[in-house]
Image (tube, rainbow, N blue to C red; front, side, top):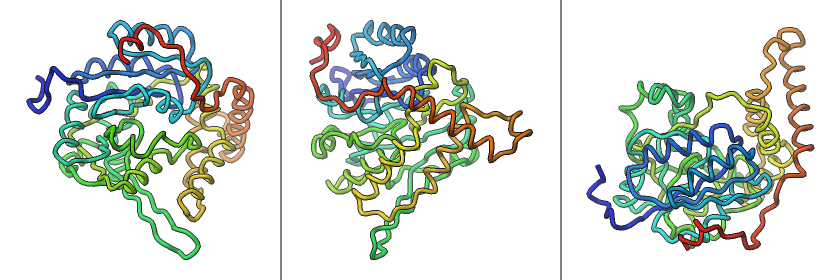
Length: 342
């Protein structure tokens, strides 16, 4: 049932889909979005470098519903994908989603209801993590954030923490309440177009860990509030194993040099005290999801296995870098689907 606060004759929201780190979950995520979104919406799907079979399926599913599919020939960063779509948006709200997310029913209307009732510039849902088939019996990834800045005299020290992270959702669900929060996650986040117009394009230099923090800081600068809406539930879906046709993008996406250069840029941009232990730990552990080498670890040990994983990922990233597209603001070919929407 369509909530009574929403006029079904008007589409107030555009969903922008961007690649996060892989492609094998993309068709599942797209179908889940179509199946669970409980309000009329427009969609702009920006696809960069996915395997042709997946790209063909995505294009067909998007365009047969009269939405917009934009194909970039090489690998792109999430912010580049979002910036590609933003000039085409004319709705009151934008919902950014990654291409590997699943959704619980009602996730979209509750985000917009929160924004309407609070005047929020950004709204974050409850984000779970794990196999999408187990919704809602999963652990919490993000239920609002704490981001505290402390002036040290040599810059600002940043403390960042995800609320209820790693707790079982069904056990802590009753404790989750709508409240203001310090930041969101780009897995799924609702933003007012007015806010996005005020801050301009999302920073193309941010390719790894802090693109959502940068957005939150900019929103605060413009006087907008950020809210967490527990009734909207989505899942960062991580069940499906990586395949060789998506590993090059994953390794390029989490290339140490590119990610850490972006982090140093972000910390300088906001006058933050450099401290990168969290980022380096993430890179070390996250890349082992692709190359776990559990049997080898028993033989050569944890440290040697981590070193080998890093070496393999960096080598693949170097080989894949020829397909990486730097942010490009040149005009894109407009398909018939795009032409109908602009």
